[in-house]
View 1 (cartoon, rainbow, N blue to C red):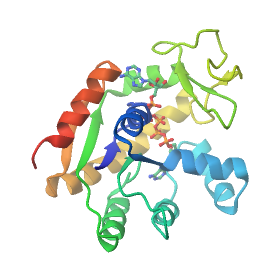
View 2: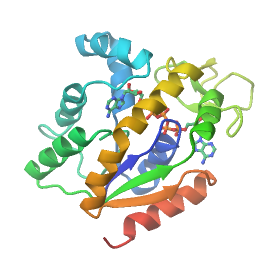
View 3: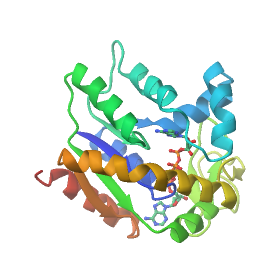
Length: 218
Ligand code: AP5
């Protein structure tokens, strides 16, 4: 199964991708995580993208396409996968398609998780992630609280707000999403891959709806 998750920041792409990985054994391809790891590691690419990510702007297509293409080179390429936040633009979708075609792989579905901007801002303002790089579990002060306030249940490290989760930056990320999403959705709609799933239900309901949507015939 090869699935793309599309949707605004905070719609729950990461939450749902985690479930698809755990329950269906898919490989996780999350460009946000890969880019944040490059920043932490201080690579040249990390240094180039940090100022953009800190401001809530998209990283250039060429950088992100290369990051993803690299995963498919050589042994151990992902055969079954879920992508979280990639492709995010029309041009990324075209590049991803071309790369998959070269690899004789095809997508099964593109899930568009729909939610309003105000709910996104509320969710993201409540998100707190573990500061321990090796753990990185995320909680939410409104929806998924840790047992001890501001401490990770798994490793006990302090929880913190992600660098780009301040409200002003979240609003800019939403702006970027709205600028690019119509062309992206039109591209996948034309290929009969697009499925809409409401992202405002409880996590388990959304998961069931996603799995049903993937099985839906084109
Ligand atoms: P990225 O890391 O991909 O962030 P994002 O797309 O902005 O999405 P988030 O991680 O904020 O949210 P999510 O949809 O995963 O929701 P989550 O499950 O965490 O990208 C960050 C940056 O990297 C971008 O701004 C850009 O600069 C760059 N970048 C990455 N990919 C790129 C690309 N392809 N092209 C160019 N630039 C790129 O949930 C959010 C919160 O809500 C959590 O606290 C969660 O617990 C809670 N929650 C989840 N589901 C529910 C629910 N059903 N009910 C209640 N609460 C819920």
